[in-house]
Structure formats: structure tokens, C-alpha cells
Image 1 (cartoon, rainbow, N blue to C red):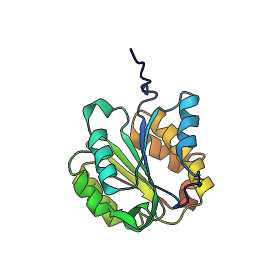
Image 2: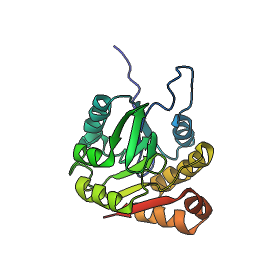
Image 3: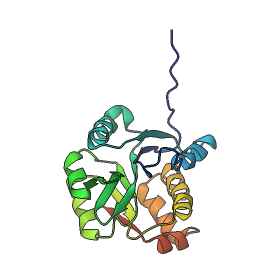
Amino acid sequence: MSTHLLAKPIGRRGVMCVEGQWESNLRARGSVRPVLEMLESVNRCSYLYRDVSTRQELSYVLRKWCQKQYAHWSVLFLAMHGDEGRLYLTGNRSISIEELGQELEGRCRGRIVYFGACAVAANQRQLKQFAEQTKASHVLGYRQDVDWITGAAFEAILFDALATHRRPSDALNYLKKRDPRSLTNSLGFASYSL
């Protein structure tokens, strides 16, 4: 009989991280995963993790994430390179947030989508359209380019707040009014909620 290690829910909500390929060099080791491992190791937030490099892989992971059995991991963290309205899976393989919205149409009710990518959220109208199309309760991201280390520090605070506050709006208010306020401002953090 084989023993399978399954992620256990920790906190009010967990994170489903989908990470693109940051570099084309196979020796490059950059990843957001250590931030998620740290949060889980101190019992703040559980996570699920998959890396993708093609649209087919992304579609597969998103279809699975929308299933009821993954409802606890209700924060979708899309960790990739980006620019206004576009995510890069690897190199020149990309997906627009309009195309992503079609992929997730109507399937994100009660879930949060966080674009952990530079400048994807530069256009507030696109965030609103994405939220309305997918029915995501909150859509989050950056309006500008973000430094890797500063972004990682902010994401640790963001995911901790989302995991420990009862309502996502309380977590976002904490970010905007409390200690990490300077981070939300300097990073150009944007949010849209239905």
C-alpha cells in the first residue's frame, strides 16, 4: 500500500500557486515557492503548487482548481512575468487576461485571483471585466513593475492576511491601513471586488 502526502487545509483559505517559467536557462532556480513553504511551515497558510509552461498545462490546472474538492485553496496566485493585461508562461508564450477570463468564465464565485506579475493590473477596466466575467470576489495585482524581493515580502504578508482574516475585504483593509501600507503604495497594488 502506498502512502500519499496530501496538503492539509491551514487557515481560513489557502493558496493555489500556478508559476510560469521565469528564465529560459534550465539552471535558473528562481521561484515563489519558498514564500509559500515558509507560511505553511509556521501554520499560517496552506498551499498547492504547479508550474506550467504551456496554455494546455495552465488550462488543466485551472480546470482542476475550480473543482469543489479544492475550495479551501480559494486564492489563485498566478506567479509569472507580465505586462499590462498579459501573463507570460515562458518566453513568448503568453495569455491575455481576457483569454484567461474566458477560460475561467463563471467559475470563480467566492474565489480570489491574484496576478503576481508586473503591471498586469495597470488597467482597472480590465480587472473589473475579468472579475465580472469570472465571478471572482476579488481580483488583485500590480499596476507597475515590481522588484522580486519586495514583491515576495508583500506576498507573504498578503497571503497571511487572506488566510487569517475572516473576510477577504478585512484582509485587504488591513493591507491598506496598517503596517504594510507603504508596500501596497510603492508596489502599485491594485484590487477590484464584486
